[in-house]
Image (cartoon, rainbow, N blue to C red):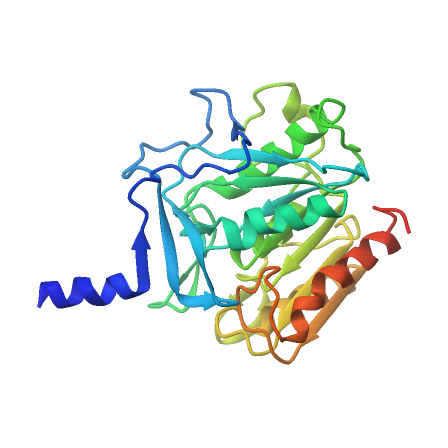
Length: 314
């Protein structure tokens, strides 16, 4: 019986034997976002970081990679090869605050952004239990003891502004982009920036951690609970919330369209410029992989939106 269960599991997930800690390709280096020994709310790692290759479901006919048990958050900077618009985007991969879809919603996004002249900063933030989690028993959101994903995001934005000259970016054109749980992080960073979620530790933490613009794809955790159409009060939108771009498929089986509708409504009520694109089909976790679905045209729409709000030139 045990052998049968192991065989079934192997059909769904292949655990990479040689990749205990995720490493970017193309000679890029992960940069620790916290000084050694100063990670706020750091906990002893119950397990070592590891990587899995997910083969079910396939996305656009290909598997994708997830990173688990991240306790040492890092950022990887992908710089444009030719033109440089000066804009930069911090990318938050999704994974339900359990893991990170590091290629599908990370490296592949960065390769597309750099082709558009935008610096991409891939944040490998702490998981698990670093953001709100859905509890099936109470059918409600469970808030973690410490908002470590938000801490990592705020720290990263501050580091970018502090090192803007060094990394060839415009400190007034730094945005965030997230997918699924990462989409919630977009809302979280867009509404929690006046006060750090941790005690400041150096000059980088004196910089503003407010994003200049925000992009959320199939965002999760925007519902207060599964049975009430009420916006999560942990994302208090105001008129200072940055302009936002939202993409969602109506047939998403994981993060319902209600999340995006509430997100959009909350922004509109706060008089924040927002553009939302809803598609009948597209499912969940499509990233920038090309399929026959119309939803895979969203990168072109986002590029036009960035020109409309003045982040990149028309």
